[in-house]
Structure formats: C-alpha cells, structure tokens
Image (cartoon, rainbow, N blue to C red):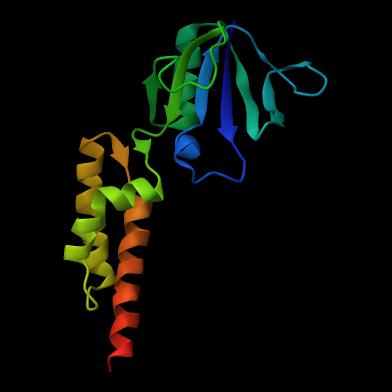
Length: 172
C-alpha cells in the first residue's frame, strides 16, 4: 500500500526564507501516525509538532494511483529529490513533492531581486492596471527562473507607489 502525507509549516515564522517553501507532499510506504497516541491515521489531521502539521490523504493500492491522487488533490506540484529540500529522510518516503509549479520566494528575496526594476517601473501616477501588467510580466520572468513572486511583486509595487505619493504630499 501507498500513502500520501502532507507536512506544512504552521509556525509564526512563515515569512522566514527557510520556511517560505517548506511544505512537502510525500508518497510513502508507511501510513502517518498521530503525534499523541501514535495510532495509524489514513485521512485527516495527524497533529502538529514543532510547528509542523501532518495531514494524511489516503491509502492507495499502487504507486500510480498515489501519484494520480497527488495531482488530483494538490494540482500542480514539483518533484524534489529527498535531501535537496526535504525536511525528512524517512526511508518509507518514495517520492516527495512541493506544492505549486514554482518555488515560492520570500518578500525579502523578491525585493532584492526586483528593487531596481520596481524603482524604474513605478511612479506616483502608476495605475492599478499598470501595476497588474508589470506584475504579470515579471512573474513570467520569475517562472522562467523557477520561482513565483507574484504576490510579493504586487505588494512591493503598491507599497512603492504609496511611498511616492506620501513623499509627494510633503512637498505640495
């Protein structure tokens, strides 16, 4: 039998770079167990320990069924090699995936990546539609690099425009 388990970081430091893309989805040969009673858990929440939540997503007769279930349940995922990004080296883990097609990047890393670009693109008169257009273009570039920065870009551009508006109001 094969089992799907998701590990999610649910702690207070979610914006920290080491936790920004922490979550994993595992296809395993051993089922999850609850963190208190250590009973087998095939479906649902298994508990949270050290800010890591474990959730079970079923039992499957074949590896192919489990793989198909990962895609059906989580949508786009990317396979990783255990040891590259995996928080766990459990030998029952056959495959490990990350949610989403692209690696999420922290706000700080996005800011470092796009600071000069954002400075050039955004003015006090930049419209919401223009920001949306800039975000879409930069997100495509980010995706080509294997990252997603969309929400961070939206935030940083809107913040930059607001900063310029506040600065401008001081000089009026």
